[in-house]
Image (tube, rainbow, N blue to C red; front, top):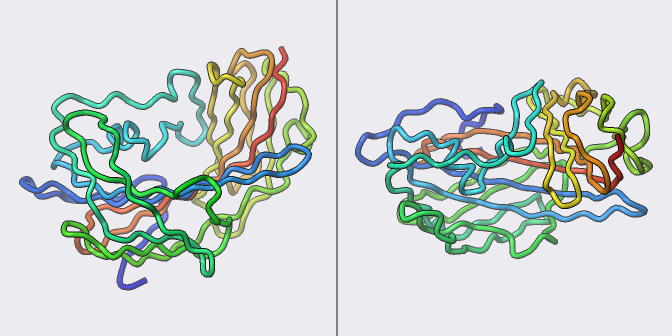
Length: 280
């Protein structure tokens, strides 16, 4: 681990900032989507961002605006429609720099992927810099196993060498007792019972279940503890009819800190999804 302390948590650890220089944050995410139809199509990508944030700034809405974190519900609750949109960024947030971190390489042994730097499209006059992403959504980023994140570092960011276990892909998912791949219709006026195969030693992993119309105009997300192996979306959580989509995300978040980085986070989001028709 190279002396880096890691801790699994749904929230980032507390930290202190310097009143003049603020704090440095490192955020790395890996996303995989497997679409279950007659065959399974899998796409994957990764993202890394290294931020210098002013002291006393609430980073949660900032991360949501930048696309670094989704506005998802807490475990046991659901969010519907506009509740899922990013929180508005407060005025007077100050200067936020997205820092250069040199070469950034991510992946499991034998399947590492280099992330390419990109100038971030201007979110506001207060935010500028570069982010690192895979070149497309066909990156070789497998589920399960140990991932390494390595950077050569930049003038304001130290080199990193982090190892973290990725969760397994969701298996044996059922919707109302029916295997996910066989679900054609879903009555949203009734409770939607979900089950999935749990993984070993993953008490902090979270399952996010999402229902959305094909055009994305209507959506709902509910959160459950992975270790329970089941959850229920309450009846009438969304009012929808016609073509739609159901997806389950297994999310694992790990925080770390190392000299030169006040707050670090590695996030895995592995999704399985299927198209269906909503009925009421």
